[in-house]
Amino acid sequence: MGLRSFFKRRPAAAGETAVSPAVIDPAAQDPLTPAQLAELQEAWEEFTQAVKGTGATSFHACSRDGKRWEEDPATVRALAATLRDIRAEDTPPESGPAR
Image 1 (cartoon, rainbow, N blue to C red):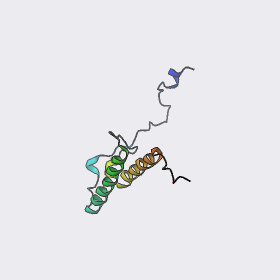
Image 2: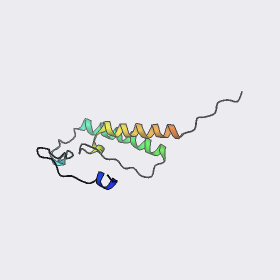
Image 3: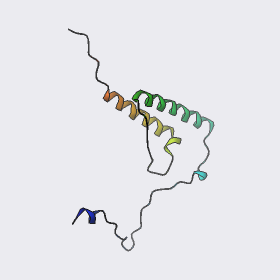
Image 4: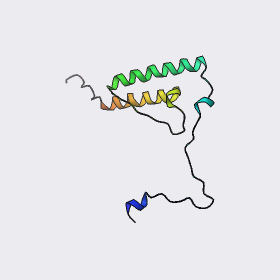
């Protein structure tokens, strides 16, 4: 069995359904409330500060469930925390006072 046959698509068996990612229609989503918009803006400010601290020049992310990650404050904050953790790992520890 070669690698080519491993990645080859096979027809679905009888009774088997194809799995497709969830697609959410943006028009079907409820608009954000003012409180949600404020929370989202705060999350984006945190994210912007985290990006500035890393010196990143570009960023790409996607979601698995079809929702826009840019509109979810929890996701934006989680990405900001990830960037801060990466920065912390890349920063060499400061040397203490000489003894």
